[in-house]
Image 1 (cartoon, rainbow, N blue to C red):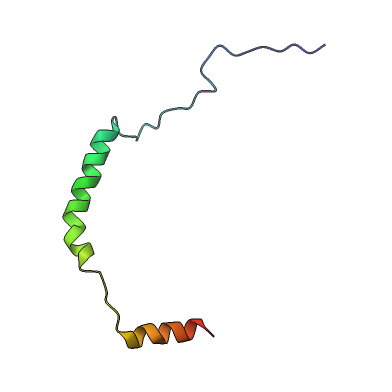
Image 2 (cartoon, helix red, strand yellow):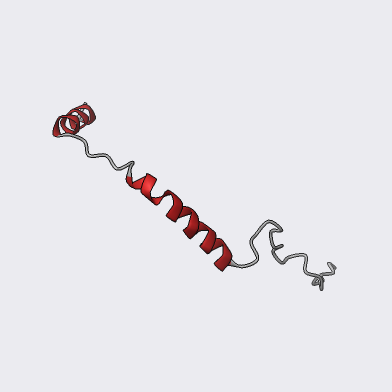
Length: 63
């Protein structure tokens, strides 16, 4: 006969990561601040390729 039992400790519960922020609101505020700081630089990365470049890419993709 096999004896079974259920553990009364919290061994099966997930452990909170000690590096995790205390509140998600603080994390969200930091992310928003970071995004606001780099937003103008991200806008500068937008490229407008010429029709010639687009046609070369399409021609290459059809090979």
